[in-house]
Length: 210
Image (tube, rainbow, N blue to C red; front, side, top):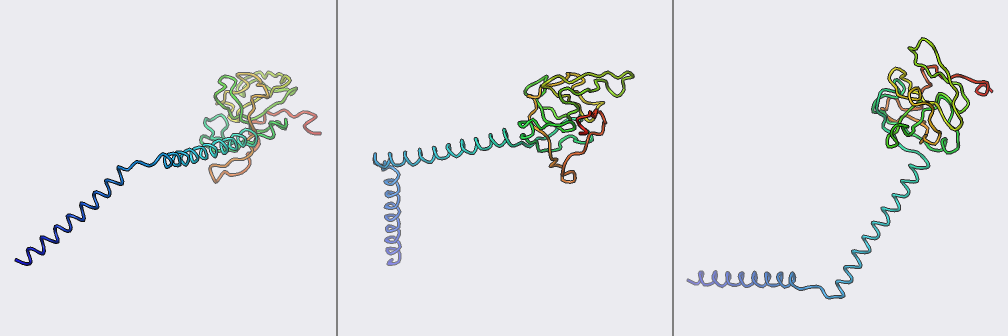
């Protein structure tokens, strides 16, 4: 009988302790922070938010300047530059040569498509302003030539039989050039500078040999 009473007392004690703990938790949850605490919490959240936005804008501006004035990574697609550049190759296109007007014949460039300004093209520079270029395809029996007008360049793909280039849309304005491809990054076994034109379409002039 004594044992039963003791156990009952212990149970009552546990129930009392549990009720006290539950009441404290409910009180803690129901108590609203003071106005001063609300202001402090708001300032803390606002400060962290503004700090995050500031860092985002800062690094976004840095990234934009880097891509706009230094260079960018480009994933190439399509067969027009084979075998020099094949589908899914990753190259680095630098901007300084374009801004300093240092683009030369034989350079591979990234340019805005004259058909669609939202699309980029990857082609090789065959002629600069004043250069004589061949406008015919390799399969043409008779060869036709023209001169590149001022402020324009003549672009062709290395895969002449499967490339839409200046032979279709003519010379393009120099301003459409975005950058010069100077390095192939992917795949790893092809890492390095790019090879010269395999088409032998570049007509050397006297100024090229000086």
